[in-house]
Length: 271
Length: 174
Image (cartoon, rainbow over all chains, first blue to last red):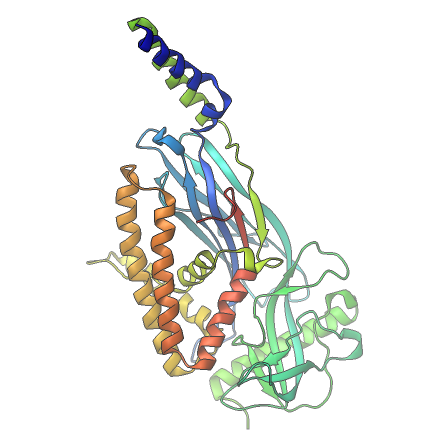
């Protein structure tokens, strides 16, 4: 009889102690949320580049100790991926509690609209357990995005990064330093050029004066780079320069660059 | 005594259901890949890039919808890989290696899922298996790509790592 009482007492103790109560909760062991963005290239036979795509991926694993959840318990990710009023939210597959769970949401935004405006975007997500509901949130952040254009001068071969050249911004004084400020470049069209136009999709948070921009091309290793020979400094994108430079530089450069992209793709690089 | 036992079991079940409806108690640490890229485990950083840039193979007898989704995924793969500015030879090699990686991942994840659904394995087994697959893939890419191509691919991984948020409740142990 005594061993039975002891067993019961142990069982009851396990039921009522806080540590035991916590053991049946799903715990997000390790999760990552990544945000990637890239510009859709023009079709081979011509056409403007774009739209820009933003892909948010939330992935990871969860723990639910002691196998306390019923076998049919599942969890899945809900991903938030938005630009402007466009919505690419997505739901991942429903998988078992110990299974790897993942989901990705892609959303696009046309490049030929509102070139002079900062465009808001959101990313984030949550993991939802069929037994416990949402138990982990990657908080939704709001960013401000821009299509940044920069004119750069080739400063010669880089000793630090073999196979590349160093570049320096070649922007009008009102827009220097530019928001997108690459420091080296790879070959474009199998040759080196004295100057380069480049486009990049950049974002910052919060949208305050002086907050640096984070761009999705590491250096000028994005397809939207075009060689140039014009020695004059150009207006680059520098949002904080304010009007009239903001509108002048963005409207002028981006339309020019997109037009150049179209011409280069269709007719090849100018000699 | 029998009644007591039933009550105890009922209490236990009640407690299980009640606690499962609460949020988890473990504190979550968030690490920004922009500020601390070195604190994001390599296995997760490389896996994120490989997953984002590879495309799962089509199954046998795909539906029209599946075929369309697959074609669309391949187009996105083109736009993503174009950023690496690889030469034609490296481009061909990285696509082949990405396809090999994705096939390994799909096969391993299917096996792991089957065991996990039975409660026989825990997530550390998943990450150990993925570490092996990713190590093989990284080794192949280093061996097969040109020096410039390999550097550009590593830059791509680093860039995605800088746009990663890592959340952990166990100090980042996979």
